[in-house]
Each structure stands twice: as C-alpha cells, then as structure tokens.
Length: 275
Image 1 (cartoon, helix red, strand yellow):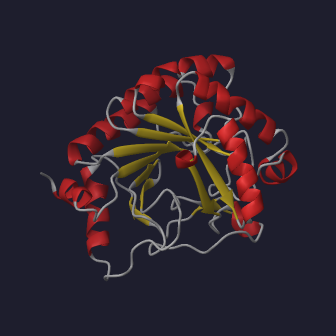
Image 2: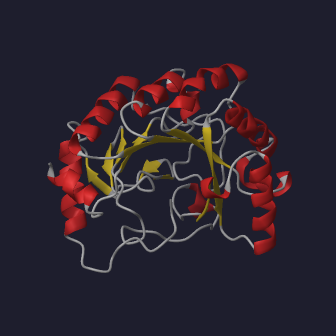
C-alpha cells in the first residue's frame, strides 16, 4: 500500500482529487472564486489528461474525484467524460445548472448506473434574491434542470453558497429542493470564501490552509491545496495555496501535499464548513 493510500485510509489525507476542467463560464457570479465569465480564458485541463490523472489517482489510493470549473458543461465532451471518470472512481461534478439542454441531459443518462453526482448551485428559495448573486433567469433554469436530471436517474446534490441565511429562509429552500426531488442528505450550505470576485464585492470569510480540507486539486497551472486554492483576482492567479507546478505523474503533487499535511501542528484541521 502506498503512503498516500495509508494516509487516506487513516483519515490523514482526504480521499478526493479535484480537476479544474476549465475556467470559462456562461455566468459571472458575484462571489466566483475564479472570476469566470464568458470572456475568461478557457484554460482547459483536457479530456485525456483528466482520464490519465483519474487512473493514477485510483492507483495511488485516492477514493473519489471532483470536477469543477468554470462551467464544466461548456466542454462538448463532458457528459461522456463523466461516465468514463465515474467508472474509475466515484465522482461529483459541479455545475451552475443553466446549460443542461435536452440533448445534454440525454447524454447524462449513463450516469444513472454509476457512482456519480451532479452538484448544482441554488442559493436562495426565491428568484429575485438568487438571481441577484448569480444572474438573470438563473433560478428558473436551475429549478427546471434539477427534476429533469432526477427523472433520468442522475443523483443531484444542491450546494447553497451564502454569507448568511436565517432559519425561515433555509426551511423555504429545503422545501423547494425536496419538491425538486433532492433529499436533505444531498443539500449542503456553505459560506462564501473571500477570494476571487468576492473580494471586490466585500463578501465572504477569510480562509487559509487551516480552514480548508487538503483536497488535492489539479489545474492547468499546477496542483493546489484545495479546490478553493486556484482562485483568480484582478485577472491574476493566486498562488498562496499552490503546492507544485508539476501535476503529472500525480504521485509528485500527492507526495508534496502529504508532506505538508503531516507537517501541520496538531489541532490545525479544517475549521470551516466548506465542502
């Protein structure tokens, strides 16, 4: 058993490896970590590279994969790629849920028989408040897409990212996601992190390595401590959570992350509910 596999088994190292599939997006959310929008540089990781990295992750002893962006579903090959990745390791793919056309939804049907989830962002229970952060018509498109995924047997997870939410609003949101076919177990509420575009809007909480789970994250620019690490502000990549510029073979950044985790003083595990 590799040292990475032992660390994952013992809970020293999280089991999930994240891939930043791309950086461009059809939206420009006010708290976006990567300043993604339709004009952002694509910076695609690439289909074959992700498959190779996924196989290496499994060989090293990692237990799950995550795909994020940008908006990953802007990549034409993504539906088929997700099925291939989920055949290697259990998978979650993050999406804003607004580009899931009928054709894309049909191409996602194979995920119904695989250990895969689509995590869709839904921040507020009413359109006006939700769309103020995420853009016009976002709420309508999301609440239309979620049940159509569920109908096809695709497991959906809803992520709510907010500065604050009171009990009454949270209950309205929970009633909504239950009506859409998503159980409470597949709904996560997390804080906005003050990185990327959130800095310009004075939103979110400060978060460093002590606050973020050490989930190995691979991008075109290198390997990072967390999927909250490879952020962009003012058009420039933040490198404070960069582990190494080397991403392949995966054992190189994995070993570097493990050394950093093992070198932390006791009691410095992640403190925030950031998932």
